[in-house]
Length: 404
Image (tube, rainbow, N blue to C red; front, side):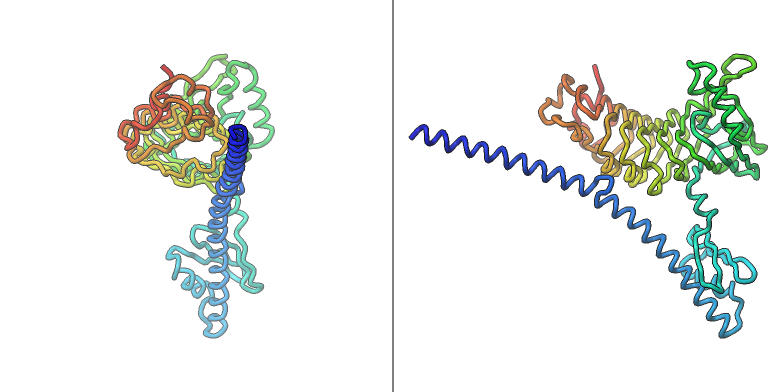
């Protein structure tokens, strides 16, 4: 009888283990289906954006059809008729152009229209503008502004400095820059010959904000480029005088092929924009160490599936008061969250339980340091100093204070 009971018990345990394994596999598949790169949430967000764009396009087509019809029946100026129709939903809409070809601005987008054929398409210029990176800078006391790019950042094709000065790069110039940047291996990251217009610009108006538009195949935004450069003639490093402090906002991330965003010590960076669908699709590393950021877009990382490193991503953002709880939902490959919110002393609400992304976290004592540094993602001091969080005491001590 005992042997029979033992066998029955063994079969039950095996069945239980198999059931748990099957449930875990189903849970993993469900999570991936929901929040993965091609998951339901990602696709829903993409569909929302595409729906809005399609709706705007249809609205323009309808306004053109209505305006042309009114022109034929009443003789009213077609531009005025189309514009009046568009301004029912966008008071800033405009229509310009003589003859059949028109340029229409609607909801911040530019459309080329042929009223004779009825063809409406988004302007090539508008499409290109969407791909550009846009940065608001302050010219400061000396008027000198340095962008967070150098010869290792990729190919900058065009820079509109926002004061009627436009710089257009050329491939020979970029090749020259890269050769010079490689002269000294120890200074490779910051070693560039400074060229007016390409990496820095001096504004005539001081202490004024300008929006700078940068176009090209740009792979990295790196604050180290704003500190100093290697002067080939003097064979010395030349300082840029706190160039990083003049970056005020990122108003558009664009679609330039970015792989790394490193904006450490941007102490005056107060705002960052939401990305478009393809802005961050290839980015693996983020860092926004700052003091001035006041809010974070809820969809900031929703289309950043390759993200691995978020070290110091919002460190020292002393004005930051809340975190969207879905901020990292689609960042399933994170390996490093060290000091991510360190020094964010005004954070309120609940900390995002990022430590739960680490396999095996539930087996460790949250009040001990031992073993936590072996887990991925690494979370040394992720919430260090965030004492105003409602669940601060529930955060594992290693994620609160880092290694001892």
